[in-house]
Image (cartoon, one colour):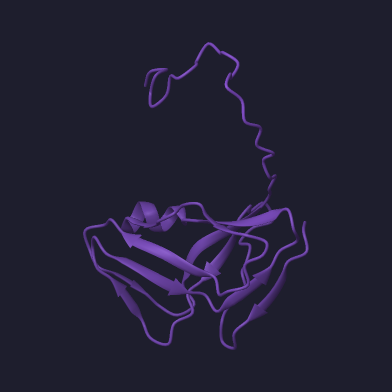
Length: 144
């Protein structure tokens, strides 16, 4: 576990783990009224949460599988990254790829937050990269 400082706007829900083995803490919508996302539309949904992570960590924001399967709801920019030096409100970019309008109510679980260690690259300019069996193969080069 890592220490995560959190400020919670009055009335907002704390992140919550649903089981002992859950990797992601559920994030909840913080809305003054219900929000409908029409098919093919995108919405920015507030959570009322502000966090402070230790240097060298990030919070990854991921979709909830049940919303994706049952309603076609996903998150854009997935996984979204919350850097250790960000102090603004966590907001979720939600997209409706389903066939029906999707209504988000205050307090609804809308995303998951997973913490991960990060490393910064030490870039070294070179004119020659080592060869591999793969080399430039990508985008399905190994088959289905």
